[in-house]
Length: 256
Picture (cartoon, one colour):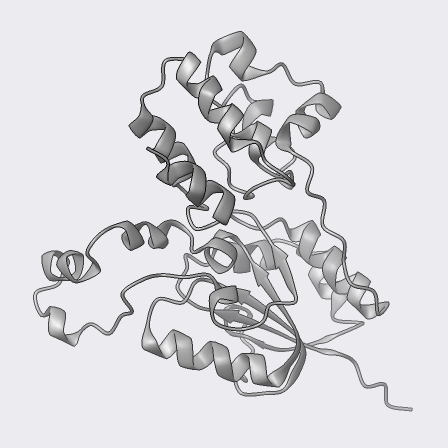
């Protein structure tokens, strides 16, 4: 008897490919996954079928061009469940920093023939344009998150996302707080876990790669940064970085 397996696709938009590499880096686990699902579109893996109807669509990257906007609407129409992976897809990513400047001016300064460049005035998360069923944050996303999401969906259950702060992850790992011992401004108190507290585990501060934690107290952290001697501009840069369009970070970063 022929078993019809769920169909999965991975699509790239404006991004660096890091989250697709998180897929590929799963290695043997990715191969085992193909026993349960059919990956029918994943250009970086060699499968190309961009217009197919799928059960689960993974989206990497932000919407930055008119073509991006057209594609995401087409993908959404053909996908039963749509998951955004990584900072670009969930919060605009690094390229969304251009939202704070004149994009046309930037394009004119970089390209000899700016009139040939097609772009939108802003770089925005996928959820700005279509309904997103699940967001997996990170820069890059954690491969284990991807596997867990797929396995859970195969059981017909919506995946639950941990929104604990990196600080809690540090406590579980026995890390010494870099803000307390080194007076380094760290985004850990307001950033959700997912990386395993990678940077604090080697004595560095958290950069906020995984986006806002649940109920982040950004006002309190901003005051802590001020007490550590950070200027307002430095504090703004901490919040308006990788996940600069995440509402909690955007609000904190835009305060005067």
